[in-house]
Image: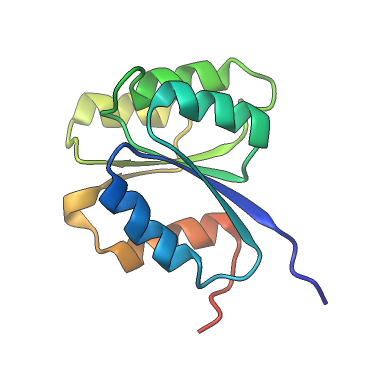
Length: 131
């Protein structure tokens, strides 16, 4: 039985974070990964690729994650896509704004181990780890 492909878009300007996440997500069968390094590229890719889940940083060049999230929610498809915020920014106002936009979760990078982040995203994607 073939596993249905799930799409994950990671919108993150730190290449080391993208690399670490990509290594972990390659352990899952049936996942297609897409990357964007800023909110402008992320919005374009989200609307084009229509991922099941978007892992979204807040502080990025060109367009920050909150602005991308707002614009995403203006699109018919984008109104309901699952978004998980992954940020260095521990700001209660930004966290509340993200939750008001419908963020599934708000993860502070420094407070989480990468395996925990991957597990949370995998749960959102409804994936099973091959291990």
